[in-house]
Length: 220
Image 1 (tube, rainbow, N blue to C red):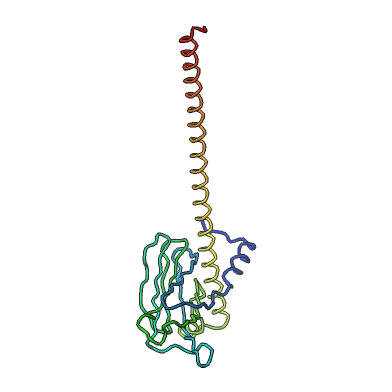
Image 2: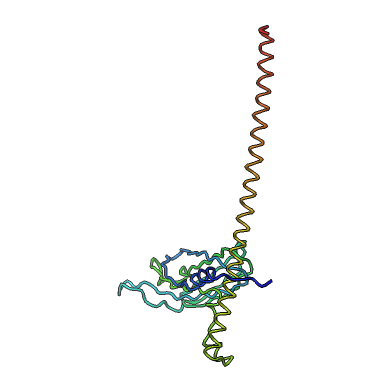
């Protein structure tokens, strides 16, 4: 059965897909920055970054020297390393998710090898593209000789495919949440039963103890 995408779900997912993941951040000499990206399974992710080094003389960030590099490490939801590589001061990394969930993207510099960076700040511009945003449509159009209409149809098909992946991921999250809730409810139920049994056993023991005490004192 072919999955049906509702119009409301299409708009919501399209708005999510249209968001830009570009940002910049500052890191120190030995600092490591990590980001969490929720990614459906079998989805391509492309990350691009460039670095700028703080210059005390000009009081601004300038392009980094070629010797200053960045180490990129990516872990899947099961904390398995799927990418660990040293890049230059400007680079591009690519990976494909095989497990849906939260992927951890970490970056840190090789600044300990650079005397120029000692005690300074590094600004990193990072742009993460997920799913159909990783496609270079002008290049695809030129390679496959597509008209503007054909290219637009290709873009819409890729967007719908990514929306379906996102919806499948949301169903996966809902299923995991339901299983966690059922497991928690079952544990609470068994804990309540155990508490009730303990109270009954303590009550019986107290009654027998009081009976023995009264018999010993010849009160009954």
